[in-house]
Length: 404
Ligand SMILES: Cc1cc2nc3c(=O)[nH]c(=O)nc-3n(C[C@H](O)[C@H](O)[C@H](O)COP(=O)(O)OP(=O)(O)OC[C@H]3O[C@@H](n4cnc5c(N)ncnc54)[C@H](O)[C@@H]3O)c2cc1C
Image 1 (cartoon, rainbow, N blue to C red):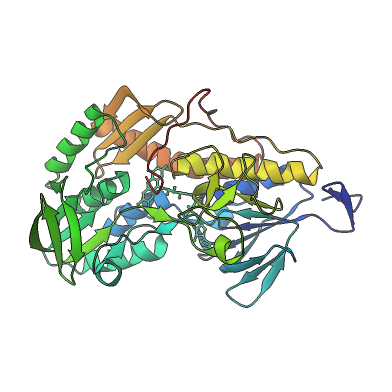
Image 2: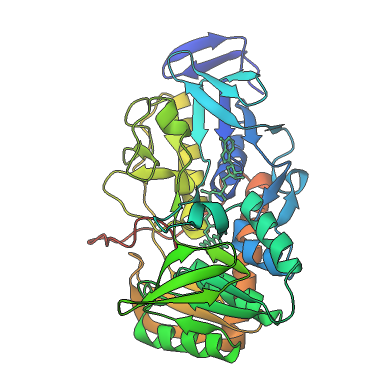
């Protein structure tokens, strides 16, 4: 608490009140930012999130198959004096520094952390919007789980998308005994190196996943998919069709008149400040940082959340925020509960020759999932302690723009 009752905001003095920071979204980036903001105990932090608990998005595929629970209580991960509003931000009035909420209420802020993550992107596949299920967020995962639980013994699930998310979902469902077909479109696990890819394919095959790596789904019906392989269309039964074809950001920034990129992410400068309004600071999947390409991941989201909080605190103190600096160390995909592929990377996320597979990789992946939550907990207990790997010194690669 500021005992003087006077707090500097960008050099201004605000009498008798603490600087108000509203954090939109309490995922990996938002929760990390909210806790780190406690480095300055004078800051009043309010978090807005649609769910009344923290969702470990990286366990959604486990939720779908009943092997893991992604819900963690906010009282377990957020610092004690954080106010949480279970609501949805519908518009940001940047002129009035006010966030409008779905409930009809509003929140005034001095600074805003924009960390609302991403949702599924519906590809231009005929029938997908009507008949497919989407693995991207809590609501989508609940729908998939309901459908998977209702499946008959011999019914087949189709997963569309050969990236790490599609692989994780396909493997997790296959391990429960259901028939699973994984249609890659542009190949399977293309973000990892050849060794890791071969190991991933072997593990998928052990679980009985039917991998159609070069096929493209061109139509989704109520209980079918039409796959194009070398120009030939084949209609296949599919009791549930799950899309894992990339993410996009919700339209909040765009409807609020803030500049966005082609998939709706808030465009921010290298200090994470919105290009249009330096009171708005982006973090996590929902931000596109000028000049830097970061794979959407919790690996990127937590350091971004910490740096967003640091940027806000610098602004409150009338200082210039630092330029974002962070890098990757690995890509990791679970392949059911007993195997995984761990591909070590350079800081720019490009694969190295180091690959770990099988049980050791599965154990490591589980550790990573736990650590991502522990990082946030530790930051609540000791704000400012979270650290991360710095970024590449020379090159920035351009991985796929939308999704893991
Ligand atoms: C099945 C699956 C597996 C994955 N596995 C991995 C993995 O192994 N490793 C990895 O690094 N990444 C993985 N990812 C990607 C990772 O989950 C995301 O990159 C990460 O969650 C991004 O963190 P975030 O905080 O930006 O967004 P999120 O974690 O999505 O959090 C955003 C929060 O904002 C809330 N929100 C949305 N709209 C609003 C609004 N209008 N107002 C207020 N709140 C709002 C959301 O409900 C959510 O709680 C996986 C993703 C999926 C779907």
